[in-house]
Image (cartoon, rainbow, N blue to C red):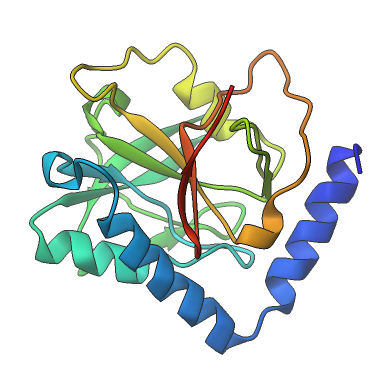
Length: 194
């Protein structure tokens, strides 16, 4: 299946067909697998997202981060520049739906993307080489283009989050697409191959 719109439609339908119990089970497994990421104790600033349209809910992962004194940062759309800005989030913060219905923080001072250690990125499909198919607007790709990575762990690390069934044989990337460093599913983290 090479048509990205057909892939996107199929994967969104599959995600939305999952039962609430299967979604909760996947959310818990993602939290468990997230904790196993190599050098996790070194990562303090985590870019996350609020689940939308059947995406894996990161609430359990966020609870783990709060318990480990890690900071969570959520994206907010900058529609004018077609990019995302990340703001620190606590579980008591009020979130407001954006024009797509995705919950966002309302803070005024964003953190620089290069201050994040890991950025968890939702997806509709992925392949083994780290190419990702999102919702089609390009916000993550525009945001992450040209970000300078920091030593010693080459951060921020871009990790796609999705269900294992969202893997496809191959996706044809566009010149502006940013490749993932790994994909986290309910089966664990898999680093991508070039």
